[in-house]
Length: 102
Image (cartoon, rainbow, N blue to C red; front, side, top):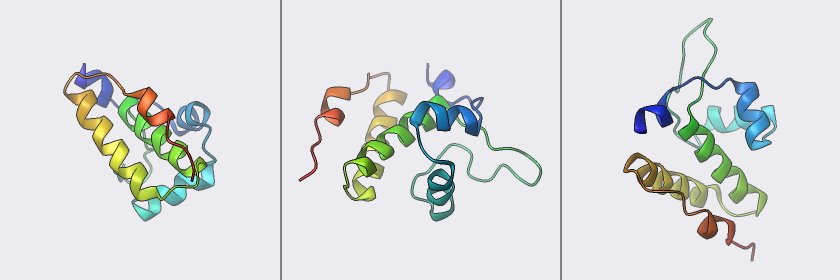
């Protein structure tokens, strides 16, 4: 299962459609290193591909940003879910979706 989660085969277009992120925001997060993804620098002339795990992490970060919370919290949640998923545990969607803006 971990191999399937980390296999990079999603395009940027896929990521933008699934997460509903704007292209500019995704690029800003990548440039600032807001979130660590499986493939940071694919190299000149190669397009970046994303894994399912990358998409989950970006989706969590987007949720945190939409709520107006600090992105550091999004990084912590994304790291926590990455550990859970790679260890074979399921996502705690109820926990993440219950976060409310103060």
